[in-house]
Length: 328
Image 1 (cartoon, one colour):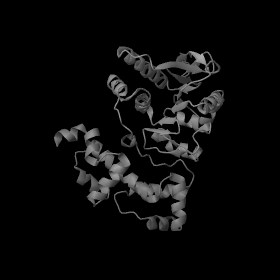
Image 2 (spheres, one colour):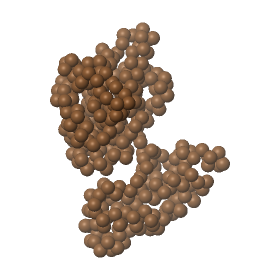
Image 3 (cartoon, one colour):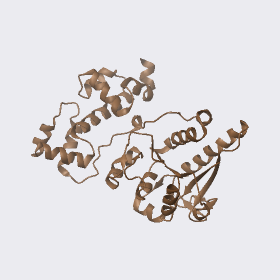
Image 4 (cartoon, one colour):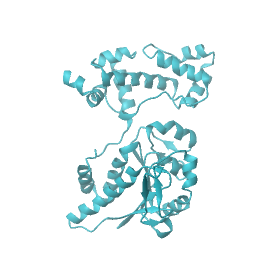
């Protein structure tokens, strides 16, 4: 029987991550019982105090055990904890040596959504691949450059450490772990019971590109604003460099540092974000949308759109614009 430790941190924690993990992992035991098998998991809520206040006192969670009571565990689940990462780390510092010790003993660790910030603070993610909520990706890269963040992924696995992307994608990660621990048959039953889309790996279709302006380079902000206001035109790197009175290489270096994108990548993402909005809300066909955002090459547009969103333009419109699909 594998021991599952669901951490109960202090602070503004995702109660959904905690209860959802507890319910889904225990449902595995119910399925095993119905199949005449012994229970697979011992699931416990593990804390650093007897009670943990959540969401400004709206909820109180009482852990089953404290960390000192758990000498050996097989999987540590860390729910998302909101707020300033340094403050979160300070409030929950007592967990860190225990997590490190258990990982050293062979335990696996799963972080959910922005819990990646907490785990990255321990150093255990250094050199490893990790996902987080797409909206927090730039901040994460800024704070933890030594971690290999893949912000388009719903989940990752690297050397016994799992991570999930935004919000409710934690359910996809749980199904993935259950398949690894219990087999494909039980993972499928769990996915069907909770109506979880099994084998979904990308959060790209859900990403809203919001400009990446949380930096202090005013020249680069001007370049970003120019791109966003003129995305339907052909914009070149040389044109932007000349406009800002910067050398091309210097401008490209500063742009990448400020936005985590190259200039070309940024232009493409702005164009595709505009195309997404048109496909979500309008009745124009894909070619009309393509021309409106400044593309004339159908193959190039479709290739870039799919690389950024994970879907073809037609698939994207079908997913987010039912009215347009019905009119087609």
